[in-house]
Length: 52
Image 1 (cartoon, one colour):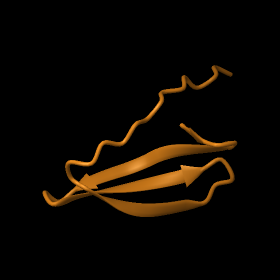
Image 2 (tube, one colour):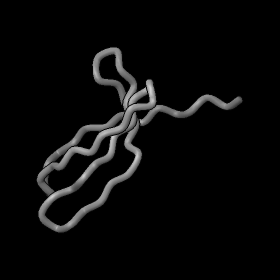
Image 3 (cartoon, one colour):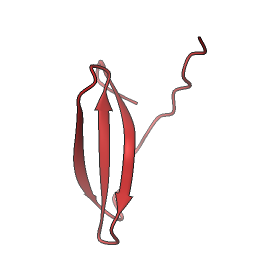
């Protein structure tokens, strides 16, 4: 998915019942985890990886 000009990828998702913990990875290789309410609507766009 893109946030503005930044490419971000969902690297990992963990759900503990009350919240979902999403680990994001940027195009620059940085990663961070953000917690969301378990019923939060998160809109993602799928982008097919280019085949080498």
